[in-house]
Length: 361
Image 1 (cartoon, rainbow, N blue to C red):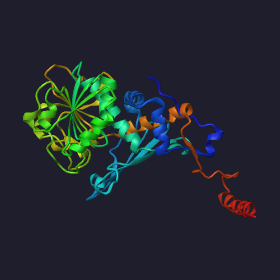
Image 2: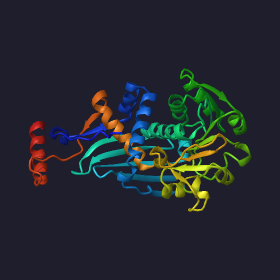
Image 3: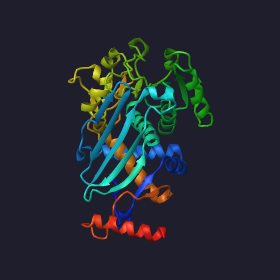
Image 4: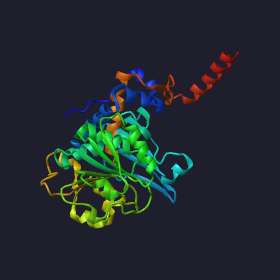
């Protein structure tokens, strides 16, 4: 798959394209939410197929009792990208988002940023797109029913991505807060999927070929016990995304074929942290590239231990950057100093004062 280059014209150097929350929503509406996620998934697959060209490291965290702030950097040797993201589950009690973020894409040759964008909405879209992409390789063929346990902000996007990319038509939803499930059903009322609100996790997974867990509590919580999970299912474990936070009983992992983004990171933050570091796992890029097998049998339990990785955010940033010329939904942000003489930055400050005084007069 080809990767579109990021070009900077001389006129581009005077500003950085900035995508605000408002403009991100405009961009999503311009192409449609499902098309947007499918586009991100295509870009993720492109970048995973050139996995070896990327600089890879676990994200850089700053932990507090209330949550975590993380930086997620990567580079393919030509372009650099990073995301700032937080995870604070208690924020919802104060009317705040659990996860917020912003991202930057830069030309590695000049160091100049070429995109600055919100990534709260974009991360939700990217996470769902990545889940559905993995499931294309790991879920039972012909799957129509997905259980989703945890019906918060990410759940809508997960349902829509699985509907669009895998043909899921039935959603079985459970949350400890029934109001969250009602909100999910209301938002998806005209989406083409049927939502059944369930009273227990056991009820939710009945008849489901795919089980998505996407809870938000920052603690180890057993959402799925071993006796709840039968053979032949695909588990999309999204909620275990920081040290000490897991959703699945360890015995489920021991029965499953585990697929991860980057083992060094997943062992710190994912379900994988419950196992020894040398426990066998398969990296997704190898499956996409045909170097490792995904689902191999009808009775196999496949588990995508999703924690999010910088290359996925890099791909999402590339997708947005390439979309902007078509939609025009961005602002020109005056972020970079642009003196007439690159060596005379102070002179630029002096001239700005004179110009400002003249304009005021």
